[in-house]
Image (tube, rainbow, N blue to C red; front, side, top):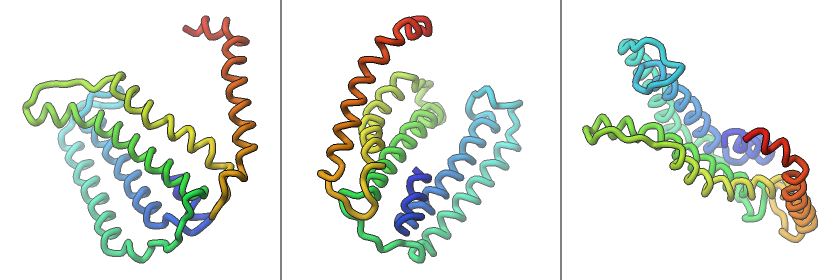
Length: 195
């Protein structure tokens, strides 16, 4: 999502505040991941010997950096806001749609990771969020994401009309359908060998 926002900021000087907020979010989530696996809160192959002092240091650093960044954003964020109006059928709008879907996917991963920990800390017992949860949630998020991802590069910056890319979309759709049938048929032996 951050890379998509950076593209809009670079090309059209839009999404400035959103890009800044995504940067803060990305770094904060890196710190959260470090805290979870290095403090021993989450069992992981990356976890070392449980050291509560290290965990508290990482937690304090995460709170300080994230809190300070969000405070600065709240106080001075109005200075970086862009006043660009985006047309509904533009590359910027499609990238914004992709950003929303990617942020929803991030929230699903965060929920799936933290829910068992919170559930256990509240004394409600032990639960497990497994593969079926993630597969179900990501299917609903990634199908529209893939569609927007396929259409986005074909649409112009600023404003475009759907009829301008109709021929390109039709060619892409026919190619996709042909390859979807042809490749499994041609590679059947290799697919069976991999399973």
